[in-house]
Length: 221
Length: 225
Image 1 (cartoon, chains in turn red, brown):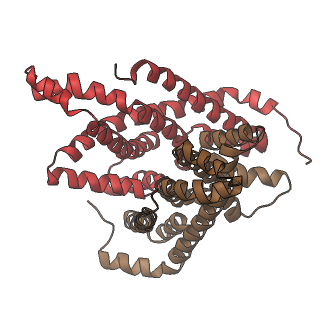
Image 2: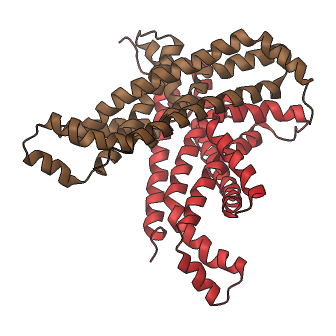
């Protein structure tokens, strides 16, 4: 092996890499939040028992789960302007893709969560005279949140890793920035090792925070 | 809605591009199949190392699994393609992609195996030990037949992830299905139409794979104890 490491290139670009990492984390969190809203609505549509409501949602979920995320990203970024929807810049378009993608997965998570809530909870809430909305807000949703917290956490980690795909439409997150630094400096190994270490460390950090959250909230007491 | 041209024109353009689309589809299928085979064989071996390995082997396998599951697949592919070249190992883009996809999925298969083995009641292993079966025989006749059945659903999920992961090979220049569709778009500007065609093809591939998985599950489901 005749490769000589020169880590000064990382020190010189540390600001750029830091910004890129934060952007990736931000993209993942925002997409997860929007995805949770989409997923929740979709899950309620799936369990509603109305075919006209659950069939399109089923089609959406299966379509997203069977097609590659990169395809969705390209489709929205290059395809939407064909429909004269051009108010989306590349970051917004990526967030929309990732949110739609997260929404499909969260729908399944929430559906399983809703299904695992003991019937007695809802009956008890009915018995003390809660209205349907109150039952959902005060009984069903808090319990479901606790049940699904581990899965939401897993999705956040995988969404964070998926933000690397934003590089394909030149959103300046970590992978894109690493490739740019590579192109300017040719220090391939240093840059990729650093980017990998940053991804690993962040994913571990998120996992640790989630474990703490789970310990606090996930069990039904 | 503003589909660029009439459906007839699209069919004509798709027919014009059939050769590159078919070869792209072939590349997608071949790279998926190779990666799935690699991940299954190595993943099972890694799973055995993770579960029953010597004391020094287990943490190494654990480290491998954790690193692979903590990295984005795209970073892994770029790393394999550009990184190996620095060590004088010039792997063609296609093979770099297959290796990266396979190495990534190996970790997932290993973890699935661990989960499946852990769900086999411990008493069975002890019973097999008690009647004097060697470790290899315990693994082949007692643990694996039960673990395989439990591994099937997550294994199918991993296979679907691999098929979808092959789109990332386009970024290192492998002309798979997505890139061949984009090349067709670059000639005729029928962007939406070709993306929809590509999406339909991926759905078809993955739907077939999922059905195959369901059939296999049914086949194995009488392996009860």
